Length: 214
Image 1 (cartoon, rainbow, N blue to C red):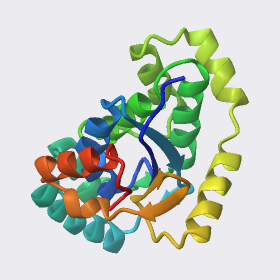
Image 2: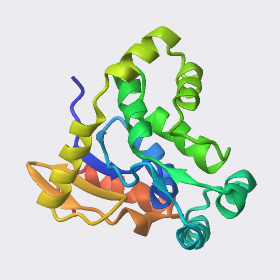
Image 3: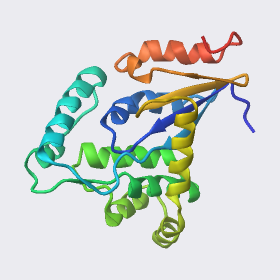
Image 4: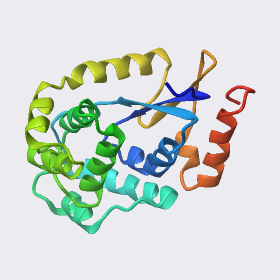
């Protein structure tokens, strides 16, 4: 077992635009060997049909997210949100896929990243099992293994545990983050680091020091 200086608990939803904005920070964090990253899935959308007013709200938020973080919202995604007759968002099935990827011995974070790219850059319907199976195949997961594991995965327990911890530690919305170090937990305003990779690196370096979270 690798000893780490701190554990970062990341509470996310795969279809949260602000979590997509946090993706470069999370990917950078995951590359480090001195800090453990633990993913806690949300459950923001449950087969929800998005009306035109909500779509406009999301698109306005997407502009702000892009300006702060630099992540790309593609023409395919924007066209879908603006013009499709019906847009349905469902976080639950993608969360099952993220957990299933981990059960298959692959990176849950990689599956999260692929789902975000498929949604925000390719404009795909990422709660469609066929789309998720394609992502699993691209990760090198055998089709039969994937289908069996995906069918057997229970995402509700993981979602319920995330909600419980968010309530316990008074975390509000996604993305939320907590650092656990020396038996103590402290929330981190991850959105304040959007577009500031050097500052993020400095923060992570401080986590590896012996003088606490601050």
